Image 1 (cartoon, rainbow, N blue to C red):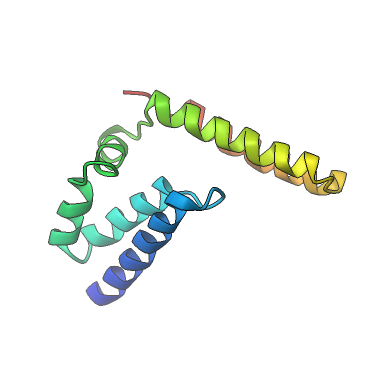
Image 2 (image 1 turned 180 degrees about the horizontal axis):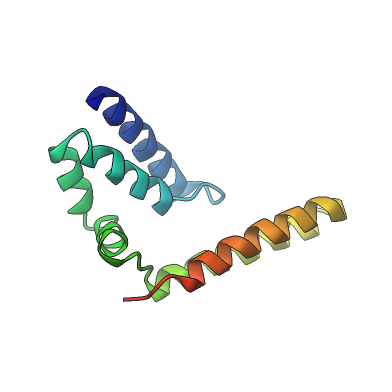
Length: 117
C-alpha cells in the first residue's frame, strides 16, 4: 500500500507545483494532499514537504489546527474574484455563471470559516 500512497503523493506534489504557475490549479490543497500521502508512505518526503520554506508553514498550520493564514485567505479570495470576473467578461451563459458562483461561493465560505493563526 505504501507504493500507492507514495505515487499519489508524487502526483499531488507535481500538480501542486504546476499550480504555482497555472492560475486555475490550486497549489495548497495539492500540497496538503501530498503531505497526507507522504505521511503514509515516506517519512523522508513528508518531513521534507512539511519543512519546506514556502509550502511547509501552510501545511503545518493546517495539520495543527485546520488554520489558513489571513494572507492565504485574501489571496484565495482575490483569485476567486479574478476567475469569476474573467468568466463574466467572456460572456459565459448565465447558467454556467450561476453554477460557478455557487461553487466559488461555497469555497469562499469554507476558506473564511477556517480559523486564522
